[in-house]
Amino acid sequence: MELNKLKPACGSVHSEKRIGRGQGSGHGGTSTRGHKGAKSRSGYSKKIGFEGGQMPLQRRLPKFGFNNINRKEYKAINIDVLQTLAESKGVSVIDPEVLYQSGLVSRNDKVKILGDGALSAKLEVKAHAFSKSAQTAIEAVSGTVVKL
Image (cartoon, rainbow, N blue to C red; front, top):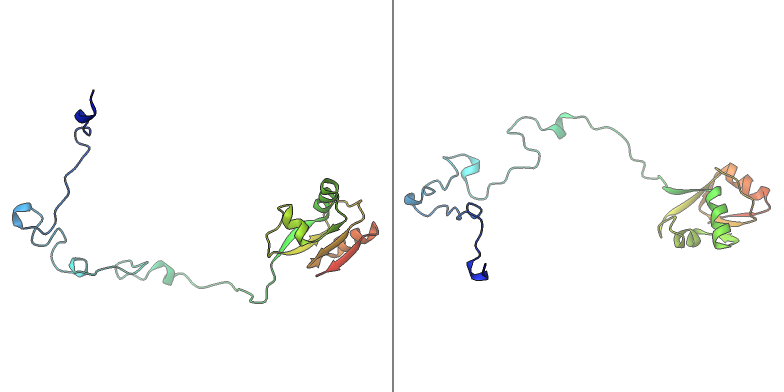
């Protein structure tokens, strides 16, 4: 075997279809577009969702739902997560920056502390919102709650 003898497998390479190059090519005249109609014209592109004139699906289905423009989206963190964070990192102040560095929230997330789990460490917790159960659990172990 020599590099100058290599060639593609038989039947794997096709010659290019040369469209619009005379009747003798078999692809002249209409250039494989057929006769008349929008699809035969230059510059044709159909609308997204066009179904041949039938009422398209996105117009047949009704609009529904409601988006509240005043909604505040919080990232929920339970107090058992705060407990494990305090044990592993050895911190006494937990704020969104500490949560960001530990990979629990993104940079611009608003944080809400929820009351699931048990807390034994005395912590100063800074967050944007607290549930009532989380606030009582933090204050029960003489910790402090700071709303940002």
